[in-house]
Length: 153
Image (cartoon, rainbow, N blue to C red; front, side):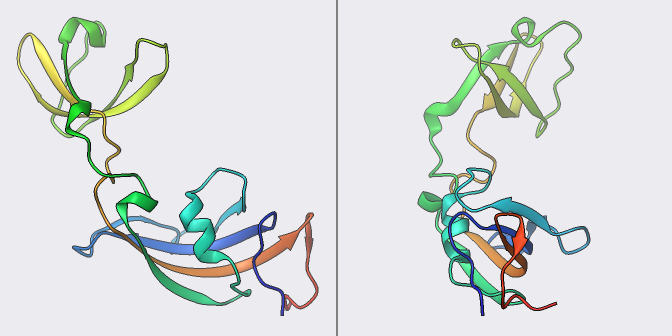
């Protein structure tokens, strides 16, 4: 039976949960997610957990913060003048905003608080500091655009 290797294109169904049981992402009600292992589109640790799995195989695994979005870094909390966030900007606590950094890159941030003059934004990834629990099923494995021998129907 063919198994997942780096360079393969895979389709997977998954549900990602926090320790509380809250689902933060899932494909269970939609089409499976497809990506190339080693392509840089998903977490490397997620890819590593798929290695060796066969088509139709299911697996559950946990990713520690160091293997996912890192530990929280309190130095990534910044206060901006409301005027820096654009004309007509109406902040809401918990909203995600794109903040332009000094190098011109845009970084997502979560609004923590605001008043008439300033807005406090957390630039940590929303999943930073969390253990991530995944339930995954490999739906299909392809190599070079072709289904590999042994993958079934």
